[in-house]
View (cartoon, rainbow, N blue to C red):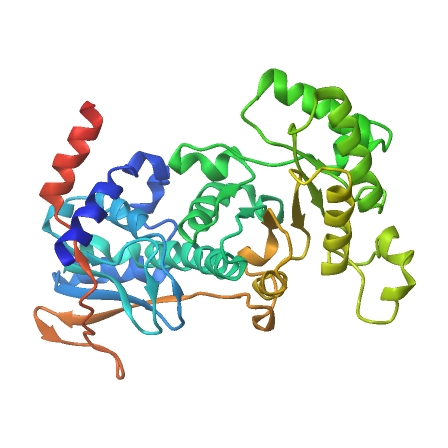
Length: 397
């Protein structure tokens, strides 16, 4: 089993060459490191010391680890000048592995001055990637087989769209909404249509959808046509209007789905007009009653092939509720909760810090009180020779 894991790790790592990560060259100089690590390396140099150490990384919570491929490539390319990565012993888990609190996820053995300046950036990579992967995994687990689409780029700095999109993929997310987010695996962004397109057609959902469909069919025929139907707060009426118009224009089967994205501050017209629902529970936003009404209306006119996508405020807790009710959902669009915006009560992981400790020095135990070498039989030893051979085969292909 271990050899199979190691083989798979090395083969998959070749799909992520160092240049893909676009490392800032200043990493090597410590510009992106906590200054005390840079001063540590310089102090050791000044004292004429260069101990052989074991540095191990762990998190204090359960989740999904991501960023290990990136960390290996960082060690390959960003060591201090004069050191060779082939002299390091690196043991790691595989991106996508589920981890337990305090479980060692990554370990480095080698001359401390070679990588002391990388502790900050390695911790940061593992922390951010694992946060996104864990929240994505929680949403995917809750969805019980229904696709989860990562809609988070608008909620954070554009500079991290690419690694965040990859981390969401590691967590099991099906697709991402930007090309940048899908670039590490050679994909492209997916999506439906925004409210802005409807606004550009004077608020006419039907005209906007027909125009969108003509564009997609002419220019990007592989893209599913999904209409956004909450613009006028009439999801049932506009779903039917769009479905009828699409049938008339193109025939049956062309409209792939409708997306319901009702604001959490609004109650859809179909629910306001149904006195049987009044006072039973909150009817604001995207809720089970609205989904059922849209589904029933579409089915009644023979549009059973039109799926229903939902988005807006979805967390693992809300997704799980929809799944347990057996609602007819074709896909969930999840945004800010995957970035950790939310609360633990909603199943959102709000932080995922990694810690690194020196636990051995020159072959002897040496660590702060409460820490030490913790074994983990799941760790994979990086075989630099095997990796070099596989990298060369990929580059020569």
